[in-house]
Length: 132
Image 1 (cartoon, helix red, strand yellow):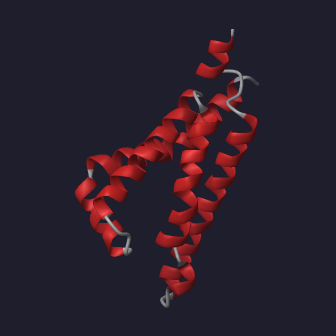
Image 2 (cartoon, rainbow, N blue to C red; image 1 turned 45 degrees about the vertical axis):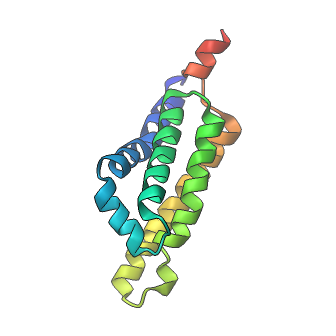
Image 3 (cartoon, rainbow, N blue to C red; image 1 turned 30 degrees about the vertical axis):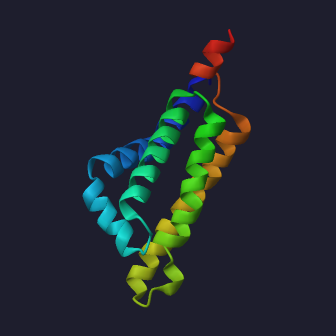
C-alpha cells in the first residue's frame, strides 16, 4: 500500500513536468500561443509559468516541499483555466466542447493539487526520508 501514493505522484506530476519542459524548450512557439490569448509580456509569462509548473511537478514527483509545489500548480491552473479555456465565449460547438473538457481537466488537477497540499506526499518521498 505504501507504493500507491508514489504511483499517484508519478502519474499526477507527468503532465506538469512535460508541459513545463515544453514551455521552456519551445519558448518561441509557446509564447506565440500565449500572445494570441492576449496575455501581456507573453515570452516572460510563458517562461515564468513553465518554470512554475516544472518546479511544482518535480516537487510532487520527488515528494519534496509538496505544499509549495502544490501552490505553484494551483496558482498556474486557476487563471490558465479561465484564460486559455474560456469555453463559454466560443461559438463553434465542437471547439467549445474541447475547451470545456480542457477547463474541467484543469479544475480536476487543481483538486488533485489541493489534496497534495493538505495530505502531503505519502510514505515514500524525500520529505519522509529526511524526517528519519
